Length: 315
Image 1 (cartoon, rainbow, N blue to C red):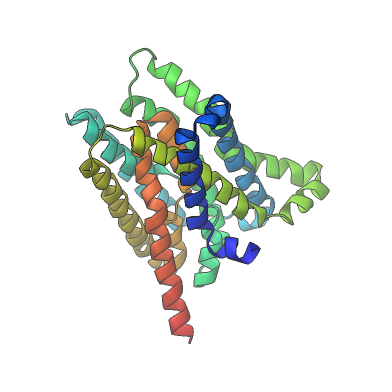
Image 2: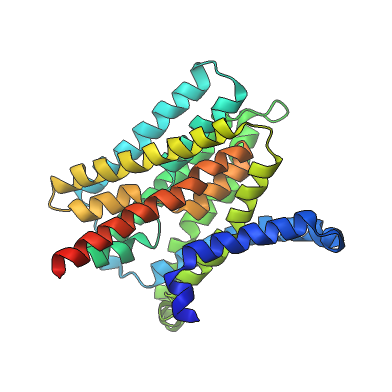
């Protein structure tokens, strides 16, 4: 059973999240507990993301965290591409429903690298250690840019920019950086605890599965409750496909100049979609979470194709 769940975590988690949402939406005797469940979900998701990152960083040795030149080029690409989409959202008039398309793309661009990217990179023959360094750097970038950018893009009339910025900062910054800081503190002050947690680094994979089920349910909820047409929802999914292909392509191009083609592609292309869906659902128009929700599918199709090509080459 565990082997089956590990091999099919993506579809199982998305299916479970979808089924649970429809149960709570349509089964009448569950109605009394719905408010408590939605509150628990909103609180549980950040904790799952935090512990997923903590377990990953506990396994990392500080001497392995050495930024190199291609890291900075990828960070620059990530920043500029996100800002370009934000400029379109701020300065180009468009119907409200089409804003979701660009917001979904923006989240896919600024979202940090997935913690599981190092595993895929290692299987493809890339540098997993260097990829982990970029994962940390991309988390720092997102922790800085998201609180500054999201309040400008999605303006709430009853909340000032500084208030919105501080609210997002308080939630996002600790979520992305405190796991690394906690891992460092444990290394120096409680090394036995750090070693114990490092032995459970594979648990991060299953925490990711639980979080994916939760955010999948939230994405389905956004789709069902939205008044947007199927055409707009299809455009959001298409926009996430375009951003996925662009990021894998340019990640490989930039990394290839430094003999890190595989690591560059995974660093820029494979995203922490659980975090992206949560950020979009929480701080932007909830329908925009369909973008990173679709990105889950696109990036896994690309990774499956890359792994198939490698197996074929080896055989």
